[in-house]
Amino acid sequence: MNKDHYKTLGVPRNATLVDIKRARRQQARKYHPDCGGPEASDDKMKEVNLAFEILSDPDLRRNYDFAETHPENLVAQKQAAAENAQAYRHAQNYPREWSAFEKWMADDFRNTKYGKEPGLPMPTADGLTGWVFILAGGGIGCLLSGVIHSPYPVVAFACIAGGAWIAKWLHQAISAGLASSGDSRPTPTPEPQPIVIKCPRCAQSLRVPSLSSALRITCSKCRHVFKHASH
Picture (cartoon, rainbow, N blue to C red):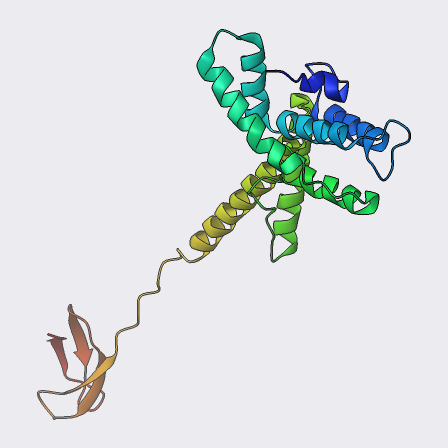
């Protein structure tokens, strides 16, 4: 490896993404042909862009660091050289007008693995209680990200989004449990439908309940008492 990307940007090897992004902008103001002063240089600007391409990607940075500290590892050297060449193709195609370059830098940062937002979107809710749960979960995730204290914004976003999603699922589970418990009330037993029978003595029509057990019935006309069981 010939180029020291950390030296190009003027940052230490333990630099955070914020340090790398800030250093890239400072070097761009110094070397960009449309913005820099006497030291403006197209070749220098390409080196600055290349350094950012490598150091802003966690995988490329890890491979670059390993190759730098293990010069005897030919496989690591070959891989780092190939990744360096691929990154250089993008680094050399920067806009030569400063206004366009500033937008290019912002897009370039958003497209890095560090700068990308995670694929997990923030959840939404239909009711007030759902939003209360989501906001509470996001707040807990924010506190967790503060405890972790990671230099990468993606970690903080993942903590907040993860807390919000967990809170939403918890709210849905509670709501479903309450709904099912409300529907678990015993179904009332329907009252037996009356049937019409005739008194065995006077043939008077009588309306009695339809039950499987035998009933003791008194005829309303002749007062004859008899038993009847529905089948």
